[in-house]
Length: 250
Image (cartoon, rainbow, N blue to C red; front, top):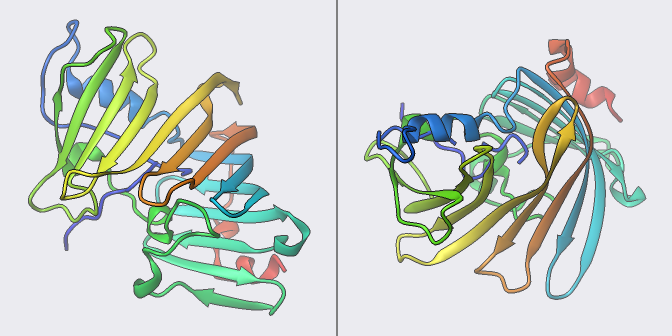
């Protein structure tokens, strides 16, 4: 079966490279390996604020998120009140949503995987993809404007299924922290830009704590994620990520 690559990093996100090159005596694989591990941990718990902006409206959500490896994710919306208790569970490539107002768990069908998750600029599909760029993309260094950054172009391999024809990354040379990710379609149009900023120590890890997703196809659309608190690599029970537990969260 073909592997499916991650569109974006969310939260779990998700960036490796395979083609080797050299820039300041470091290989492209080493650069991308470091950037890939920016948000990937054995386990994580995070409290997040997510602001969604469109031309016509804005709203802000508070949510808690648990992850274990690359295959398990649980997201519980805490605010606003009208959305409180809505829960998303992802196990491998399957995904379910629990809606407390109707007291019902609904599995997300394949036909809805490219739909927006809770009105954000993330798709349902973003939350279930688990491959890395090292396995699914060919990578090369490209000339950049600022000498303090690596500029890298990724193109999917022939065996890779991807909605993107090309992805460009900007990575800080000193810290190897990902600064920007731009995604392009087959017509060469820039569809989405993700920027990473506000770098600080959170839960003992130095990471960007603000992620901004900008849509270039939907004018005025942005999703802004701010990490409020986080814990990484702490013991976490598998029972958190079960269908039964999802139902209990009502």
